[in-house]
Length: 329
Image 1 (cartoon, rainbow, N blue to C red):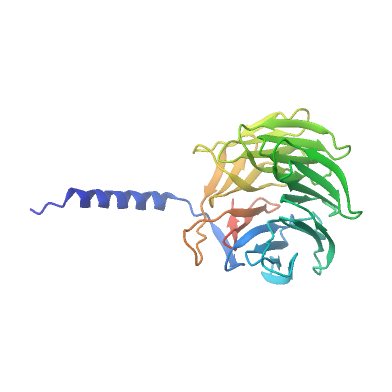
Image 2 (spheres, one colour):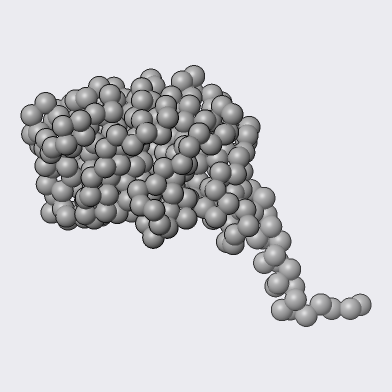
């Protein structure tokens, strides 16, 4: 009887184990897939109504897409070169305006025809949010603050200060609140009626992402490779739930509450998409989309997400420049 070498047997066992682990990874139920940027995207934003998509090409320009036809409507660019790049963008709730940022500038566009209606030089930007009517932008800065900026009059309205750089910002669609997340470990809520600080919560590490529900009742905060918590905006920010992550932690880079605030979709820095029960923090669905396209390794950041109004589908855009439509029933 022939005996196989021990090292060979060990290699077979390892390969079989890896194969089993890979086969157990949920790839999700994909309904549609579109390649938007062959070389990948720095940033992406899906309009709240799901009708438009902005992709920020690594080549320095951005393109606005009609999601129904998957056609490019027009391109936008801050400078006539490829040295910069759109790092973040946001559509107004009525899809009338789009705000894009590069690290050193802010631009405001009319969505219907791509006409530039405002441009401002602005140092060391990190993130942007836009008000429902498209008039105000909330700008996250490395300079330890976020600025609530009136783009119609071209003036600063409020300055929201932190002790370290601000990484992520959000605005409630009802116009009541601003939410900021900083390297000082704090997610902070601010009143847009008077600029007052309402509360802060410490997540014991630098904040990666913050998100507000459309009705302004709930606030999500995530720490890099750490905890993710949902708070009530009322009062002093009472804890609603902590997302129950199986591993030690996760870094969230995109999120969307459903219209009724019952579920939450989050996109990870490491390719994963998760659906959560808001009230309990329990995972309802989790998958790792296959997004490889002409690049190695097979990885991607989920740049933006949008839950359909009936909570049956989810639209996502990844850093590999690929958009996907998922069933989340």
